[in-house]
Amino acid sequence: MDKPDYLQGNVDSWQQEAVNYVEAAELAWASPEPYWGIWRIPNREVGFLPDSLAGQRCIELGCGTAYVSAWMVRRGGDVSAIDPTPNQLATARRLQQEHGLDIDIREGFAEQLPFADDTFDFAISEYGACLWADPYLWIPEAARVLKPGGQLAFLTNSPLMVMCTPDYDADGPTKRELLRPYFDMHAINWPDEPGSTEFHLPHGEMIDLLRANQLTVERLVELRAPNDATTRYLWASPEWAHLWPSEEVWFVNKSAT
Image (cartoon, rainbow, N blue to C red; front, side):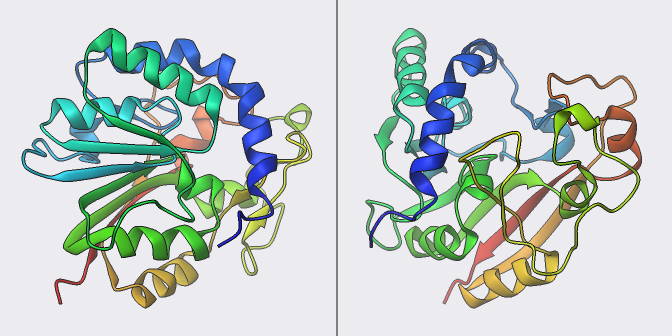
């Protein structure tokens, strides 16, 4: 498989953005409890990571600075992490050394994973492959490398948030009006982020895609911003996200047969 056309644009964008995520990475690696998404919701309220991953092979898809991988290792997992952005991986490898954690960190892309079929018990993506890779490419790969009975969990923006967010940050945060259609949602290019491509699917299409790859939805958790939520992102409105889901977590299982 050749590299997807959009991949280099996303890598170039994150090569520049990586410096802006170093401080957040350092805080996340040092945190005793995982927290998730733009509202930093504690894991105990979401259950995104199991309490124990002892004896399990785990992979983080689009790991960025790999703090999720660090949290998995501390829960006993045997962890691999993959991402296409060298500057993000440089931060990940530095923090890995500083914290003394054993993680197999690789440069690569989730649309073509360098692992054999049926390798992993658990796969996860938080705003990694699930946002920046074409789901019609990365989901079949995730399913391929999962063992029968394995679990995939991923966290990304909700389609509703995408439909209600203006093209430009200067136009303010997420609105109460629909600004783009729900049907035919797939690749999205934000004018404020030239060259980069996000991917979002309507729920029905996502479920069909998962089922086509022997993945069955166990839960869909729509995250709610806490009353006192704050964020660094100009497009994200805590008030909006307290009334409507800005983020969602999918828990899916691969067929055991």
